[in-house]
Amino acid sequence: MARYQVILAYDGTLFEGSQRQANSRTVQGDFEKALRKVGWSGSSVLIAGRTDTGVHATGQVAAFDLDWSHAETELVNALNAYLPADVAVREARVTRDDFHPRFDATSRRYRYRLFCQPVRDPLREKLAWRTWPTVDGECLVQTAALLMGTHDFAAFGSPTTPKGTTVRTVIKAEWQSVSADEWQFEVQADAFLYRMVRRLVFVQVAVAQGKASTEAVARSLAEQAQGPRKVDLPSGLAPAHGLTLVEVTY
Amino acid sequence: MARYQVILAYDGTLFEGSQRQANSRTVQGDFEKALRKVGWSGSSVLIAGRTDTGVHATGQVAAFDLDWSHAETELVNALNAYLPADVAVREARVTRDDFHPRFDATSRRYRYRLFCQPVRDPLREKLAWRTWPTVDGECLVQTAALLMGTHDFAAFGSPTTPKGTTVRTVIKAEWQSVSADEWQFEVQADAFLYRMVRRLVFVQVAVAQGKASTEAVARSLAEQAQGPRKVDLPSGLAPAHGLTLVEVTY
Image (cartoon, rainbow over all chains, first blue to last red):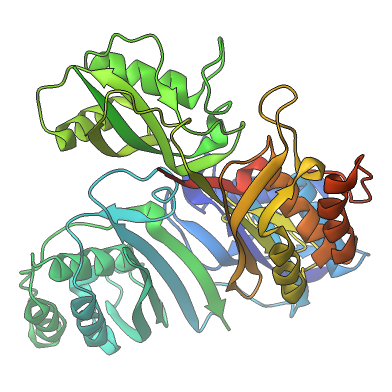
């Protein structure tokens, strides 16, 4: 018996999130079903990051204990043979016995994709948020710079434990232009609040569409340190289907 | 009553091709249903390029006669409101009364996407062909160069009419590296043989994986001019889901 660490990729479209729930199709549920086919008899796998309904992953991390006498690549192949088409194991390796994918993580990295078009675009809008009017790219870049560092992000999400801290440290917040009408946001932090990435994207896009000011974002981050929250930011979330969990670091 | 020319985009995954067929879900079928909702009473729309089951489009062209008293953008919005999520009208405009999207076309441009990975990748493999081993990029570029110009492409497809010519003129054939493991082929020609793009991609990838030679491709194009076809190329087709009809020019 050894503890294995695997990297999971999934198209979140048809999953009700990553965490197992009764009567819902979840990534954890499908993954545990495949694991049982290769001899796993545990009660629950450990998963690094909770992803909401519709959110994708290319670098989700899971861990479990398994008695497996073949090579690690054979485990990848065996699990992929049992997993449905929208989820796959990308890598598997033996790790230390007390490895915990969530508590041991030092950072998480997410990517959010969006494009600006007034009409529907069936090929792109499954994995990216279509928004209109177009965004001011310079403005996205400037707003993202404000997020860097340690701040109280209470205006951008809820704590992940009751009464938990809303202070997080953002170590990367970068917008890249992918094509004439397409943008990609990469954000990495020690940890994220509940729905924080989708909220960050929504607010930055609102600013870049002239619906909110960069100053309001700066103020919302500064105010938290000084007292009660006075939100003057537009409320809302960027849709789940533009978001992908890309990497968890240890 | 005026003739309208529209640009259609669709995710071909759940369609049995572009052309209407009884008892199958097709792009033409769904598009004609939406057109009837805005008052169209014709028997059949005209479509520029036939796409196979699973093939996508961002620039398919269709034409039809319609009595429409509002702006062209209103027609786009009205049709998109009735069309299902995987097909959309991107543009609509009035054209000349005898415009025919297929017979008037001067060229078609397709894009084929592939990536090289040994294991499944749920987020990418819906719209790109996953192949392994990896391809030699230099080799793809060299093989594509052979396709340029006017050749008898009999080794790469069937004529679109019985006993029709298999001579076509390729005006663009270009591989681009999109990321470390991802490639994109753009090919434009006056017209294409049946399944020609998927066959061209399959053969070029075989060459770039060391399973066939560049010389065999050169020979297959030269031989046709000199007499009976002697095929020494690997047989097969790249899968439909990597292919997109990008543009039809007039």
